[in-house]
Length: 231
Length: 291
Image (cartoon, rainbow over all chains, first blue to last red; front, side, top):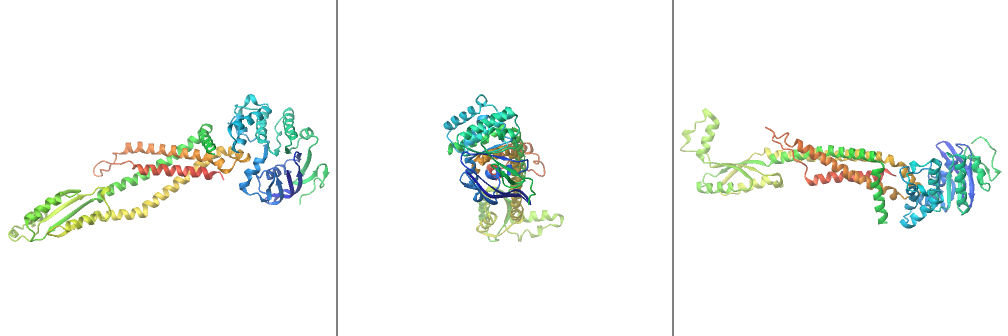
């Protein structure tokens, strides 16, 4: 599903990621851990084509990112669902409209679209708020809308950037249950987090630990010494 | 595909409801720029009309040969009298001409001693007023040729001032007016284009989210294009409406002695060109705003 080899990325003279290597098979769950600024978000942004890959190789859902042309980015994003810490939903649109957006861009006919949107909204426990404007929802509800939008297309891979970062413990656990449910259906997930509770919620998940843009630990195996000076 | 385009167009229009203030302010800006451009066009149009009107006024002094019979000359005066666009004809017999000459010279002009051997020929002073729509290229020269070709006519003089003025206006038109219109077009493009682009900042989140869920560029741009077109159309229509109100209020403000200039409204084709240009610029700006 994901294959990353010798991936590096820099912002000007500052290395954000350096020589990253890992792979993720179909149906696997991978946590990206590390402190703020470790490179988790940059890695996710590279994987969904928000940043151009300039050094190294990466393949995501069959798309070779090192050869990805701008016109192919929408194709990649139709195979990958993305969830953000700040939700990225439209506050002046209803729950239904926000979720339906992901299918509308694919040109899906209205009738199957409505069925699928209603089903995912029901699965998220938001069926009574289908036509409520998102600005009137709580933070947890808004994040469920964002997750629903990323999952309504049945993506092969979900990239989640600290999706529970702003939520309390109960809500975090509830959302992790939703992610686990999709994971059991075979969806691959890469989730950035620095929360211990989130890591403990999926005990069989793999963990890739980043520090200052480098992989220091992968699946419990030390790749390099922690706190090592960055070249 | 067609259905999807209709849906996207509908979404572009529905955005007026979602971001009413941003759209309203953009509309006002588009209307104001249209009004400003309209004022300049209106001025050019009225200067043009005024000059065209005066350049159509031309006088010819016609002299007949001395051997031309009075009957022939009388017939030709009548013939000239029926010519199109003739405003006035004043015929002079040799005696009339002598009196006119004496009156012009005042006390020193006593030509009574020339009464028996008057050297002046039959002549006529004609004034033509050709309206702007009938002023084809070379119309004054055609008139001159026609008069010269009349039987018994020795020579025809005409006042070249009006024709020179017309020629001068053409030179000014080519040298100044078109660059002004080009400059105006650029101002409209910059002001309207940047206003529309600024208004799209309110929709940056939507554009980003659509892109994140895999929308192709045309899908993102279509509602913006529709919205931009509607803004251009409504804004330019409002601008033209305000221009019409201003023209109505100012129509007779210069219609006083000695100017007698009536301010007329733009012709329909110029109004349509103005609205079309503003709408086109708005649509293009909306399309290129998201890249």
